[in-house]
Amino acid sequence: MIKISAYAKINLTLDVTGKLPNGYHELRSVMQQTDLHDDVIIDEGSDKRIILEVMSESEKNSDNVAGALCHDMVPTDGRNIAYRAAEKILDAAKQCGKPCGNVKISLVKRIPAAAGMAGGSTDAAAVLTGINRFYELGFTEEKLCEIGVTLGADVPFCIKGGTALCEGIGEKMTALPSPKGIPVLIAKPAIAVSTAEAYSLLDEADAEGKLVHPDTDGLVSLLKAGGADGTISATKISGYLGNGFYQVIGNLHPEIRDLCNEMTERGAAGSLMSGSGPSVFGLFEDKSLADKVRKEMEVKYPGVFFYSGYLI
Picture 1 (cartoon, one colour):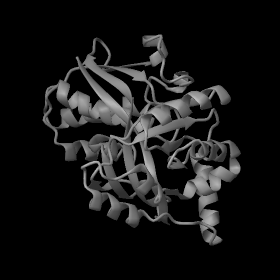
Picture 2 (cartoon, helix red, strand yellow):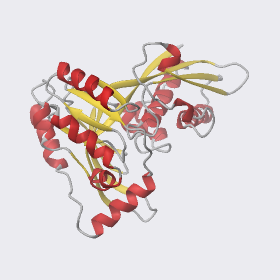
Picture 3 (tube, helix red, strand yellow):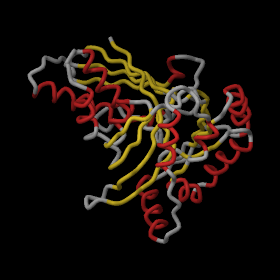
């Protein structure tokens, strides 16, 4: 049995830079992992090629950190990207003549579903990594990323982890020094955001010249200059936070802007929506303040998922 931690990501910047003939959008984003994670447990299967089980932290541990995870939204068949990841790597192993048996996958969910934090993609990445290790297939990280990008643009980043500038549809990655150790507060309101609608609204705003593009290059320069020695502060990073989707989705769902504004009013150095939403995050200089704000906002916003942790 092998257990892999599947870490959630946030987007410190997210810019849509163009649209390809196939309909996919080109992005430039500084992606950042946090210590909020699912557990992905890989074990040998029995009679079926792939068995996938999903449980929430509350089912495993009464001290639930995740609140309303909506894990019942997570399918356990081919509709689940983690299941498809298992199919992909088992097929790749067969094509390479590598012996590989059946597999049982257990997901312990802490990352909320449909949150804009790559919860599905990071599970898929962990499945690829876990099966590769469990059956000693010997696939390189690059090969796993090659398989992963066929599942989703975020999967290669989730395989590599840390901090990276992601371009193209997300598959072109440049590793960056990580500002790990910065406290982060995450909130996911109980609303759904249509990714297709988010892109449509963003395209419309961009065509009208209303879209403000984040300074991704500025953040990249800051991270490179600061290195990985912990000298980059939450305040410095917050000066570069930006997400085109936040500009349009924040107008559509005011509760997203309310959560961001409240975090900054209560002491966050900066706050932003992650991905196409609806999750938002706040960066703090002090973990005790982040924990205090979490407790206060949990009382004010019942039904909203909250998590306080660190960038990694």
